[in-house]
Image 1 (tube, rainbow, N blue to C red):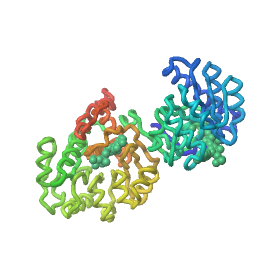
Image 2: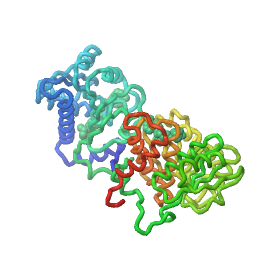
Image 3: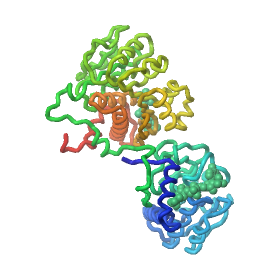
Image 4: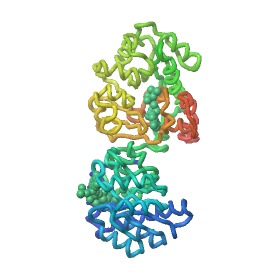
Length: 495
Ligand SMILES: NC(=O)C1=CN([C@@H]2O[C@H](COP(=O)(O)OP(=O)(O)OC[C@H]3O[C@@H](n4cnc5c(N)ncnc54)[C@H](OP(=O)(O)O)[C@@H]3O)[C@@H](O)[C@H]2O)[C@@H](O)CC1
Ligand SMILES: Nc1ncnc2c1ncn2[C@@H]1O[C@H](COP(=O)(O)OP(=O)(O)O)[C@@H](O)[C@H]1O
Ligand SMILES: [K+]
């Protein structure tokens, strides 16, 4: 599990640790790790550290101090280091160390910044770290913009400048890092977009903070975590005990959504899939997934006669007319956990009382659907994903999986989980239906909404990577790639 913290949490832990150590110890640990990472990057890019050119952008706080000390270490290894001092003051000890090591430094001017950035093999962003707040003031904003246009490798110190470290918000210009070297612990803003996409590859430098950190703010599951949580059949298993998932999806307009949701459920290992829908989607599902046990619903009929299931997926392509409402009512009247997606979300947004039920509910909206559910503008949700997913979970009394480039899973009383391994090729029609099917299988197998949602998001992204391998993908490819993705997650010994 990779865990992350808000800046307030990090600061509290740092205070506790700093009180026990000689002044400056933590900064030296940070700078040593940072310089080592930069030396590695320079060796990879320019073939050597000696003679390579490094531009250090230094703000007035300790983030600037880290960058200046790291610059000094690189200068001692023969790099030509030039610092641009952007704050009204500079970190004095760091600046002195840089100069002593042979590095150069001068206050910001546009001309100087262009000169330093233009020829740099590596650009070190030490403008702002966890002390940054709000949109960047000048000259930080201009300097970041210039740095983003420069050809060198961009490395952010602790957090890319312009990214809010506690939640990933970006208001205005922000440093676009190829890599971020962060200290002590991951910051939440490095896991959540738009911050995450500004961070590039993130490396964590241990400065001894571990024992002083509280419960995390957010967590991201790793392959090992998902592999450990994923339900496996035992010797005594039969299809019913493994979990039967019911799928109420598809209508006369969207037949494909039913095929995709059933595909997600079948390919992620449901014991059995029961599909309930009207005639048109029924024939599409029957043609593609002979494994599914099918009930054809007449207009106005609910799912009462479908047979026993352990969990439902409600909504992909279902439509929002009276027939669809009847299906939604009948599914939600039951005692099984339900994944509500797509049109199902529109229906419950209209009739919120449908969510008043004892059994668990997992809602899987994208930003537009969440906007209808909680009445917040879509752009605000996209800019502050974590906050809105948490708010929705609390207001709606459900687990919420907010889709998008970073998927956020929120449930009251638990740290939010994030999935950062999605790929932009996933942004294509129908992939969300496959995700709903996977989550349904996991709920039917007995996982909680929280774990089912996190494991589904991870596996869905992994399958997309398999399916894409750098090329565009179609939603059904994601379903078809699930077995390969799962093979990589589940150890052969336990298959
Ligand atoms: N503590 C530790 O043990 C360790 C900490 N470490 C390092 O310290 C970093 C935190 O350092 P920090 O607290 O000095 O804050 P930092 O991020 O440098 O920025 C503060 C300055 O930013 C300014 N400013 C703010 N917003 C702005 C805006 N929008 N636009 C423009 N300016 C803005 C603000 O100005 P003010 O508002 O006060 O005028 C203030 O001067 C941390 O990220 C890590 O790198 C490591 O060495 C490991 C040990
Ligand atoms: N830019 C992106 N990067 C990574 N994943 C994305 C991106 N955009 C969308 N996704 C993922 O693709 C899926 C799209 O789902 P959804 O919006 O419901 O589409 P549909 O309704 O067409 O099935 C979600 O899993 C979402 O997290
Ligand atoms: K920074």
